[in-house]
Length: 336
Image 1: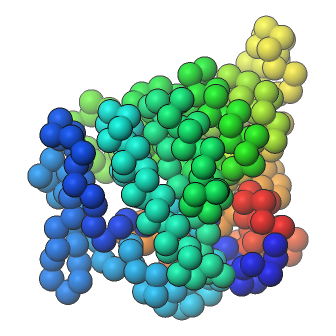
Image 2: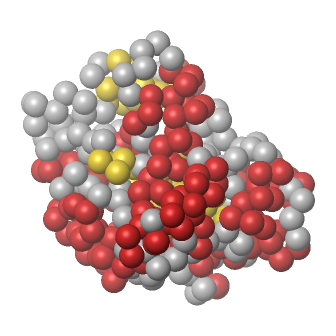
Image 3: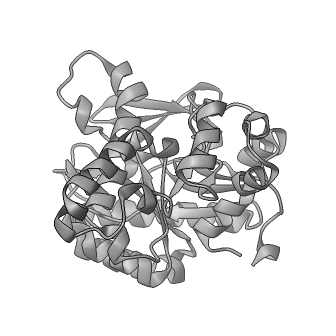
């Protein structure tokens, strides 16, 4: 209900990392993350004994996050795992251990300040049957609104038929799904160019994920599925014209698609994390009116600074701004 949250701007794209991880449940899981404490309250996530990311207490301390939210004019954050913790590379029992830990941690942060936080958990997508089991208790056990998923699962696009039970369960249970770039396919095997992955590979993979869901008919089969994409849908905006042309040339992809891809894309959600106010205006006015919510990628270095100023400085209508600030987020999360 509206009264459950503080009225104001909602940030749907922001990540958390727990201050510590459970012990690895198996000696064979070499990529199990560990947390190493550093100076001045900073800690480093290590994977296979190598530093992955240095963090400060904004990642795990609710009060510290709220300080930043108040400074930035944000009423609510929707918390989701750091994508590298999604754990698709583990055997199912180990992945379920990490899912339980992360979902429980996010639930505790939400419980600490329920008017300031909502939560998206995670599920072991590499085992769709286990993922469906996780989804079935996500609300009752953890009180979360949905899940974050990677843009691909061990190289399989999220539109692959193996994930159909997960989308059916999310639709039936009324859970939101937020797709975040993860280990982008386009830059796999490109050695020595980490900037290419970080600044180009992520939005490319997000666009491919959205395209795979459209072309495989997931959105047509599950019209009530609420699914959103990080990075403004990535490259999807530049692909829709070509996808529509293919739809026309193939008579609806051989009769399997009743609507052109651009129309399907209008029913999906996207965040505002594009850094370019002119492109944000295009998303809002042309690609997906009413379906774009604020997303900052907090608390990482690439985050959108001054998020409220960014939204209010974009050339959008007052109604579109109201949707960006909270309307689209409320519809995505089904919170009134």
